[in-house]
Image (cartoon, rainbow, N blue to C red; front, side, top):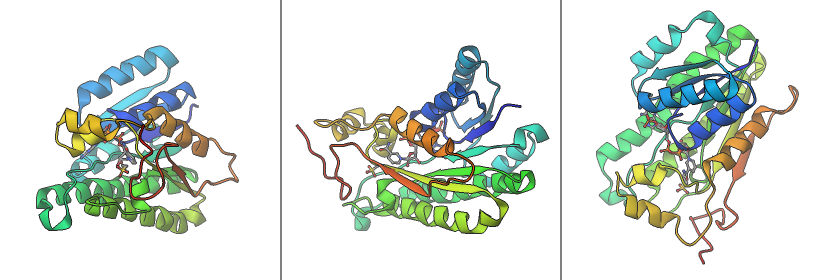
Length: 253
Ligand code: NDP
Ligand code: 8X3
């Protein structure tokens, strides 16, 4: 039987790239996101290209009742998930704390922290029943360091870092691996979402230096997922060569 990867936020960027890498490695997939037409197009492509089984689920990770309902309704065979990639997440705004928007803060905390928790609770219980599994949490360099105006986004990714460590302790006795991958700047739809559709402002973020692309992160995730059973990668920080670790300092041309 093929192994199964469940990837949240597979409609674009890192999640979509992960779906392609795991399909290439002949994993069957459960892909989630809100934009169902993108999930369906990706599923059709992956089935055709790699002959893997793909299930798509449309839910907002902030909607706990809906995601629990949809995940628990999956057939038992589909709950034998080998790898969960907790990837769905976003940033909203880039304002000093005193000017921050309550709605932006709620959206980031509800998505990046609470959404990740909701999915993890359901899937970690499946993994406990199955006696195997690997949870890969997508954090960020923003979960290791703090940069100007990054305040709440950085706080949510620090929370992911803490939860990654906590999950490893709590799930250790069940033989479940837990890994965090913390990327620096990756050119995806991330900045367009952060700046609420302002494409010009988003483009500027990546001007004058070579950022990571989603594939770079997906291959790093695959590296962690493909280690032998007795090896766990606790965490990896993957940065563009042109970005120093801290404070979003870039070597721009
Ligand atoms: P994208 O905006 O390209 O992708 C984000 C994904 O998350 C989309 O598939 C989106 O799906 C999904 N998502 C967002 N909000 C929700 C929600 N409420 N419910 C369900 N799905 C949701 O950005 P990236 O690929 O860059 O981001 C992926 C992860 O990587 C995030 O956790 C981000 O914080 C992290 N990261 C990104 C970095 C970067 O520089 N790009 C660097 C470090 C970490 P849909 O909108 O269809 O629901
Ligand atoms: C996204 C990368 O450095 O813009 O997590 O916060 S950064």
